[in-house]
Length: 101
View 1 (cartoon, helix red, strand yellow):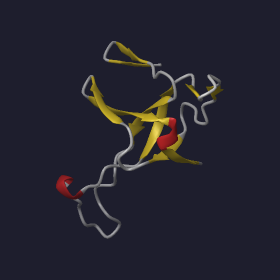
View 2 (view 1 turned 90 degrees about the vertical axis):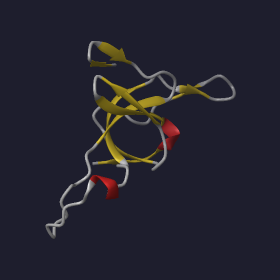
View 3 (view 1 turned 135 degrees about the vertical axis):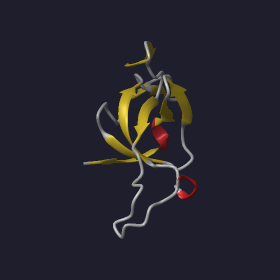
View 4 (view 1 turned 135 degrees about the horizontal axis):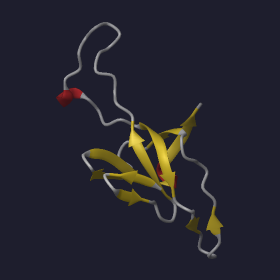
């Protein structure tokens, strides 16, 4: 659960709350990337996880990620939400492709 602007955000089922990491604004060569040319970030930090989803037999599918991990997720995965002026993503666990060490 994450508190943001006095509101509690707690993912349900197999949803993961992710804070997208900012993309570099200046390339190593010194070129500044304008906002219009930036791609959506695909790396973020897990802020909260749900308890797990259910399979067709009604058994709980355990969560593979945990709070604090950095993850790579599908480019168009998740639902963008804005709470207290901050942007967050609610992503299904299946849309997370990898964790970063």
